[in-house]
Image (cartoon, rainbow, N blue to C red; front, side, top):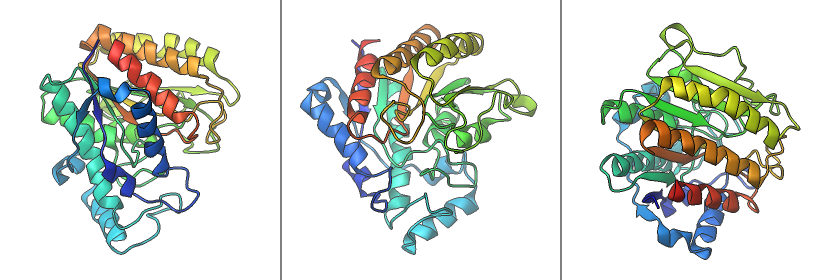
Length: 316
């Protein structure tokens, strides 16, 4: 059994979105209740979150954007740059804490205190671009984590696997001209026209050409398509790239009961996704993986999907 870290902080619940917003604090509350109720929490190494230093945010985000975001929260505005991006006065600080949680999990893994980790954080991050908030995301947690691994820990090659049902446009944009970070995303397209990116021909630019790989899945499709495409697209790509560490943008909004998507993944489909990814992690980077929560909005199924994911992190 692996030593799996679990990064969570009650302060993540203080990011309050407007009533009825899909990305609510109830998501994490439901996950925590499940993990405590099924005894899984007792098997995990609980990690503490600390706010990220601004220099790490600046490693992937424009300083003027960072200042605009902070000011919007201080002014008590209801949203930032788009009505989907609901904020409160505490949102900026909680977003720093979300990034910091990922960095603390990375430290714990790199120092050998845990073998891998799951970060139960919010707000999510993979839609946040260099200078633009999108899709409930303000700071790109996984992107900052990748740069932190490289600049602080000297890791050369970072692999990012994004299985949120929506394309991680922000992560792709940040690393599109970088050949030291391989970004792979499997997602629905078109997906309620959001974010509208993630086509097969988007493969990176300049030095980063060939280091972005997208697998669009048509609405209405499910487990079988994911099985086929992960096997034919992701597996050979990571065999060729052979990352030193893998970061996961772990989205659970592709489940057939989640109204935020139109694909039909089941619990068994998610288990195949987990198994395939973790086999790659074991084979190419000694099991070093940090998984970061992105989407997943059905409160009836999200806790079980996260629980299954964590069980597989424990057992790889």
